[in-house]
Length: 312
Image (tube, rainbow, N blue to C red; front, top):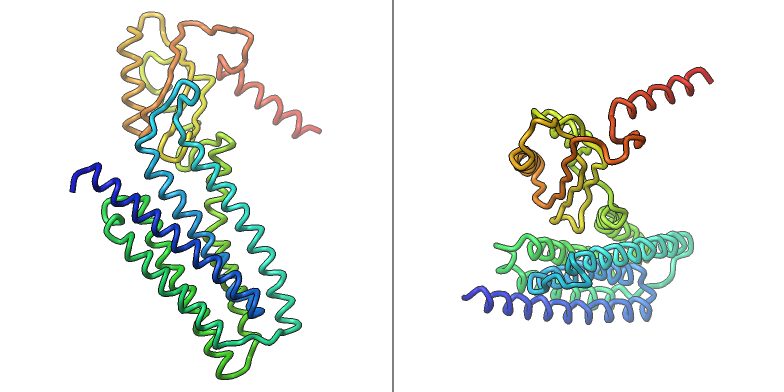
């Protein structure tokens, strides 16, 4: 299969998976409302996690065909991050709501038809397993699709636990099992949504990507012969796979700028995996009064502040 044919094939499978999952979510929400089953409604909410991950998988897949434009010089990378942030935020609110209702149902149980709960959850289980199988082939070579595949497979097991609780209610009449299973699913939702929320918020706030230390990058650059100091150093991610760096580097006057620049860039790429960088070389600070231009001044000021705090 050619690259373009493979791209189209995978896209059509993702679109089909999205459509099937949307039907499951609708059916479980309606069924849960009708049957008074908070377990089914929480499983629908967990399915919503997967709908978000499937949507982002499809979006990221389509991004490869979207070049940067004059108005969007970084392309559309941040749109996926924004979608992840909104999706995870809504899910955290949903989990909070389900937890409140689940606790209320534990204190004041409501009759639940275990047979119908089993039937609706069984449809969800079959559909989730079907979606996982649809994505299985694409998951071998694509990390993005692999994440969606494992997400759907995990959701199939959650639906299976709702089937088991429905069967237990049918056999024992313990309707308290329904809110208990909903609280278990709340934990699963939190485990899936919180890391996505935290990571997407870090990207939107231009935080330094995890695993990279700004001070380590600065000291690595300053260890290169000819580099006097590093200032105005900023490291951020447009999206997790696209890390950017900008910095001003003061160098010795006798150095060959182009050779030193190449050496700095190669060192940063080799040690930190950062390939997109803008480095401005200087032989003297553009603003001598700026304390960031002389790291010794910055260190002295920090020491004076610490001494003042200590004495007061």
